[in-house]
Length: 453
Image (cartoon, rainbow, N blue to C red; front, side, top):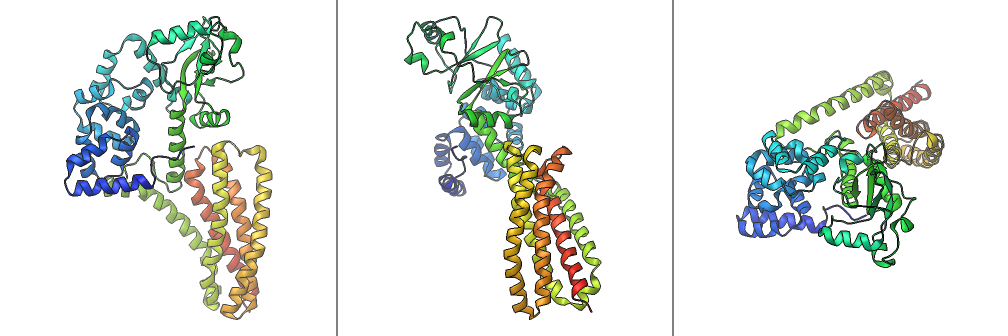
């Protein structure tokens, strides 16, 4: 799968763009921006602070502004839409593909939406309403309802003549889809067969009947997995009655994969991938305050657990120095397992069916690693404090916490998903709380038992 837009070349171009903006070489900026694909322009706009972003937006060719709006994150798109006159928005969005228009139409002012709907013929208006009737993160929300259909009882020659008569083909073309007179999906025709098979061959004789259609209510993440497993360029979308209602193409799936990767990374930090990177400080501070508050509560819980061992810490200062090591090691080990679990759950590879085996595997790995690093840490502790008893205590506590981290890394995301809570959002906080408390209690508890007179 190709990498997303951000790469080394793009970073250099952003640097060049910023230099040109600072030097007020707006002609150079205009030429550079308008020579780029819409997706790259959108990426550049998101990488600029508000003042520079507005300058660049005013330099963009109005013919491309609609497609650029489609590629922008919600918050940045909303701010740029607010700068535009209604007639500008109508001109920018009137030529968009129906699936792209469906992505942004709810962000447009009501007057613009009404004018766009009035300018459409009845068929396109009905198709747009069909897309909008499905959730954005479903196959129905992703699909383009403008799809070429063929009948299975005609020949390839008839199909070719129909395509020539149509004049313009959707991009990317992908496969063609056959439907009966009732509109029900019958199968897909590999576009290569149009040119390689005898023109007199009936479509029904070469249809791929095994490749499944996608139900409109299928989540976007599952659609992406289907494309990956079948190496599709396009796929048909059907309703509950098996009526063909649209198609999804691989460019839509690339966007889904990119969005999901961004969501996973941002949610693990309690952030929203749709937020503007350069939003005002006060707004961003408010958004992060809740997440910081939650982390404060978990930290206080760990501190409360430490409070039970105040006497031990007063008498054995070495424990206060070493106790962060146990908590940190457990947290890292648990995070490794948690990351694997979240990825596996996102791709459908992990579920209740194989959770037990995965749990035993992760525990085995933690036991193996704990044996190695407990010996290393015990040796370092002996050399540092010249006391084997402290070394043995910290080695035992490290073993306990690594195992606890592995258990939490597997169990926590499964429980959170059962509770309909996104593991990518809450998993890290819960895991850290578990490994901190277990690490501190096991280390200080063992120290109280074996080191105090």
